[in-house]
Length: 504
Image (spheres, rainbow, N blue to C red):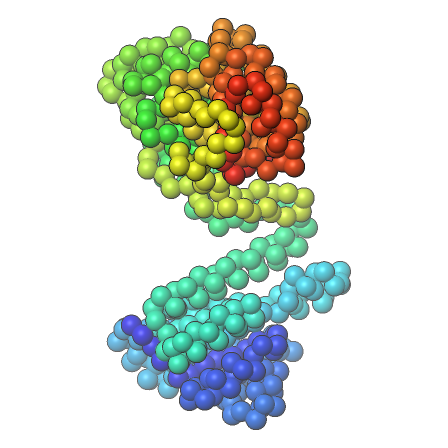
């Protein structure tokens, strides 16, 4: 239910930006309670306030280390308005409830930047403030928490809009901010205390030790709950590298609505095809690079039937993941006991991607964009025909999930060759063509997709020499016209998407 702010506890380190909030709270008739320097600041503005000590009957002690840690304070924050027992106890001990807690913690991270003196750093580990944040956030049903100066502006907007009234959604949103501040603060302290030797603190459910990391001499751990993603039906435990390949494979296979099969090696697809049946899709995917498929991870977006399972028996592979298996298929696949068989569940991939880098963490949005049929910008005199357009869209989805610099060659919804992880784009083209030819594919009428623009016309020229008839790329090079003119001269169609898909 909506609640009106009547009583506020304010204890902050940073006062900048607080003045207008205090005047608005006062004008709304909110009673202000505060501690130490914040109390003095409120009085200096000519506003009335009450000390926390008047509630606790104790002065701040231990050099200010203990000010708010008292039942008279935390009872007023944690008491539940819809719990009769809580309300009886509050009345018994003459404790009044708070509707707002506004806190800004001691600047621990800034102190680390400013000094190496241990005693100074220790004193900037906030105890009371972090406890106030957690208590108010826990009881967001009744209390609004403003957990840092970063949220002063958002809170002031809320005050203006609601005139001192808050909704359950408001309070839950600010509670999430509170736990975000708390988790970061604790992680910073942990990082300092462990002298950088501890693992990264992650907000995940579950902590599964792995046999090792990428290599046997590296330790590995998975933070998260794999049971939300898979049901393991057979085989040994997943390895660090298995999980990386599954992440790549599931993201790739989710791009396709039609029956699709992918074979992954080292985070790249060495086989990919869409066909009417899983058996056909598997055979077409395997044909893309049967040598690289050895020891791979297989991912499908449809139930595996008996025919598909029997076809797979000729290949050594570590893992297969699919949404289902018929009884005969499962009996066939489980004949090899170490083979990991996973039934995939409905999975919503996180909207953010995280990667450790240097002494910190890189965070970015997941690449969710694709070129739709209507978004293709035909930049050449020749336009792709219906089959080529279908293959171009297939290829653009595939190249999005290949390591940069990346090129893929496709015909009839089948990956013919790819060049991934190359330091030059023309080398990626050369490698993709070489792999396709080695595996017996004629490239006449095939299409080519690039994850980024062509800086020169050399890639287009090389593609044309082998019969490639259409190209899809983001565009955006200062020399785009060179590639366009080469395509026009060679009779190739080319479309721009405006979407770069770098994947490092």
